[in-house]
Length: 131
Length: 319
Image 1 (tube, rainbow over the protein chains, first blue to last red):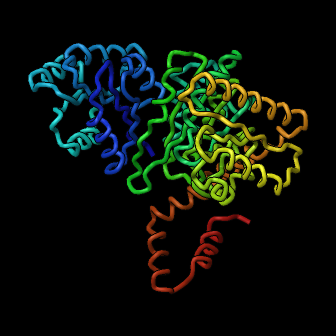
Image 2 (image 1 turned 135 degrees about the vertical axis):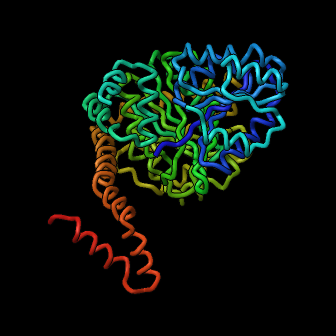
Image 3 (image 1 turned 45 degrees about the horizontal axis):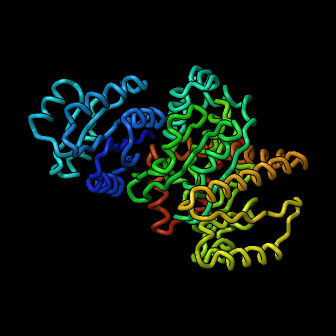
């Protein structure tokens, strides 16, 4: 019985953890997904190592600092370097639509949801994950 | 799969991680890898930590890692969190308290969800211990989910069981009900700077006076004060680690380690028989629709569960 496993992560000095905690709880309580939350102020490398240790299917990065254009490519590289090239990366946060499009277009992320996206739609996307 | 077992033996982090995930998911053929590593198991000292939710198990584990590393020993940790009984989903965050060891190659921490298993552990813990053992970890800490009552499976897997109590939770009575008193090798009174700690100490002590200790080991009570005073906290946990070592030495000197190991082996063969014998029969009954038919028959009171079970046994068991 394979269960979808996701690591929800934050990085840098981003203090906005309300949404990611709501996301984690809602996912747990409404779907059969196993969510791991690694907490605030963690480096990308720590999160990548944790993702590989847990052998998660996906990493969800929540970011509200406006640094998404550099953080997502860096996260992707950190995952690849840690041996997690097969791990799907999605994002969530205060991210303008054109930035989200550019990040997905360049392959830095597999999907990016605005902070206003219904959590239900994120869960749906996780369950019908690519790859 | 055997290849994965071989790589796990060399301590390859990715192989170990993949193997534990496969064990969790019950991926077919994972048993092949376990078969390969089983002969090399039994080297590590397995320490279990159990206690009520919020008792401070993760925080203690985190500090215990420091005490163990200070003696140049390597540590593997499995931290178990509950899965939702309704959705099967789970939210795991124990690691938030332990990420400071993320850069240390001598430490491997892994969170697991219970996935419907009762008893305070995940089904994957038994084999998970083997994997961490063969990857060369000297000490393996298993942190159970916050126990309520009757969740003491840890005794079947650990050599040394720590029971964490905190003042002000009516713990002493709860702990007796949970059967925690019988499984404890060491009691920890955590947050011992709180009001009621001395009372809890006294009560635990007097309760132990009523107990019998056939092995000759009387569980010590270790007081650990709040981690808001990092220095005294670290010192208390160092003392705790000394007690843990004393217990291990005691087990060895009195040939009791074998007894603990036997408990684990018994649990394992029980589980293995169940998955080799009962589960295939059950899944065949479900697939063929026989299971539903049996349920319907029972609903109409045409027969009873024991007659049906006898019929199934007669069909599948070769006597």
